[in-house]
Length: 257
Image (cartoon, rainbow, N blue to C red; front, side, top):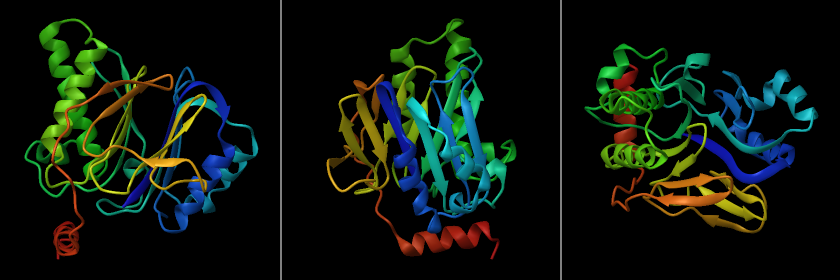
């Protein structure tokens, strides 16, 4: 699978030590790294299809102070899709209203009729990109119907509906940002934690320090703005449980074996 890291804070803090701890996990997640600093204008997104610990660019970047109040980072262990930049997270795209979305996924889609059409139009080959394209299409469809930008609550409700549609039978740990709000969801036990600071929240697949971390609530979209929880989605029952035989069958299918 992969690991994801993000923050939603009221003010900028230095995150170099947390990023170094997070990227140290790339010995196990060696197929790419990415970092989106979301409080920049324009948004700053760096990513490479190489192991984070081997990236000279990332080493130089981490030598300088990185201060942010909102970011998404990802380290990839490829399950579906080869090792190239098109398959490296985070993904980003503008919707028809001009809103820029940023997306990272830790998980696997085993079956979804909603996502199948996107394999013919996506740039890369990951199931993660297909989720993102589906999300953008949903936003665009509602924008065209409404003929004006969606409200924050409308966007949150649509993301919630997407999660309720895709979560059953699939691993759907997500971080999403829409230019204003930070969305996060998990549906596998012990795969996403949070640390509450004075300034807001830090999220990581695995705790990055020895104290203070708590499990993110299961099976429920959580949305934050500037370090404050502003929305809770519909509680669902689509818990993902790892099935090694199911994963093996999926790998064989994509390898055309």
